[in-house]
Image (cartoon, rainbow, N blue to C red; front, side, top):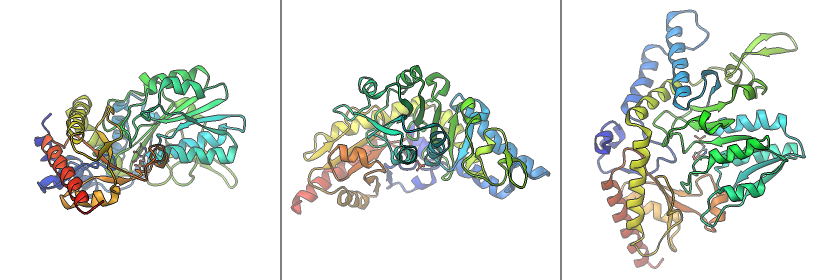
Length: 402
Ligand SMILES: Cc1ncc(COP(=O)(O)O)c(C=O)c1O
């Protein structure tokens, strides 16, 4: 893959001075995806599943075609793919439907301090309501989830394991397949937050054997407002809907109603049709390049950048050994929000703050961090410009007495 060629597909990057290093928050969108979304709004912007006319058939076919594409993308079955607003609503669906209806006060839920708020807060809520105990995997000294530490908290009371595949702050890949195997041995189910994994690595839900897996469209070249929950059919069949209304119902009586089969009982109202179609186009784009090529490229950029950053005085990198394209760091003595404003002056977009993952920021014993995240459209030249800007920032803050 040639990132210089790929850059041409992204209209925002027509601005040659722009260095976009915030893909972990949201990726840029290529024109192929934008065109597909435009096509929907210009040529067949009608509802799905309802209309008995040709345009509605066309929209329905493309919407359901996208579901098929996504199911193949992660090696799931067609009816195991539920469209949601994003990873957050997908993870909430698991907690609110499975969690609230299956857990009691004698049960335990395993999470970690490495989770995004979307993975930990829904289970805090389940724990508050059901009185099931929330248990944290101790992280090792690098801040990783390890199998040894996971074994310390897994026990016969564990009913749910809710962990990330890749951390959005540390960029570590969790040993998720082994975690799932161990969890299944004691009868627990595993819900995987794959929001940072789906855009960067080949996922295979059958191979890892997860029970649920969630991700967002907008982090993988797709539109905002669309996400995916994969769930094993036999679990989804026994879970109640958490939203009620149009299109999810079968027969409606005065005092009761029945629901459609999965996945439709979980998709209430008019869905994100353009979003689903756009996500299908994003998957085509990613598969064309190959996820292995993308992750290899990102790791190369990350290793190159970290090596150079370490040569700069005052730079603290918190996740040097990460296997993915995320660098979390600080300039010693400088608040990340001051630093990120400096970088913005060089037209570099990156993230500062707690990254919706306050627990790992507290674990690092800092108030906030800076984060760079690479994707297929980043180049070594972007890295060099960023490193130059880090050097200038370090000099500048020193000169003004920070
Ligand atoms: C690891 C992880 N999980 C979940 C989410 C939530 O995704 P969304 O905001 O698209 O719902 C994010 C977004 O940053 C994330 O990085």
